[in-house]
Image (cartoon, rainbow, N blue to C red; front, side, top):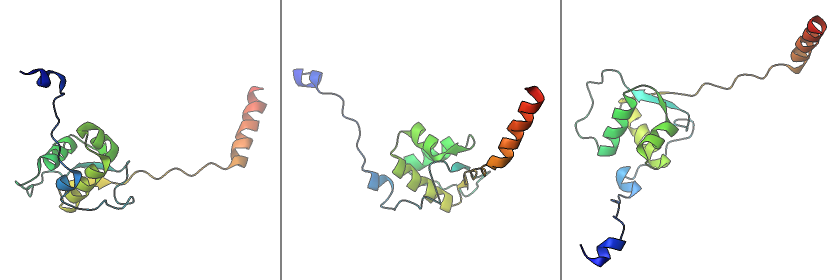
Length: 125
């Protein structure tokens, strides 16, 4: 080991995102948002033998149950855009099942809430 090796940090392997995604574009936000839930398709006999290491990691991670797209990105430490592209590709191939996030609940009517509050005050003082 030379003096130069002592002060140089170990270089991390660098693979450009467009290599990992094979040049594909980001899916629409409606198709695959941060909070879209993904899981591996049940008993997928068509699971291809030629997956990239990143795609294989995503399928293995998603086989444990539903995770949000953001959680998958956090576990893999890949850029979010790369994860969204790979998940979209796997979903299009039938290897992943996606579930859109639950729609936000409608807000309660202010008048009804005021009547409930008035009723509680009348009963409990």
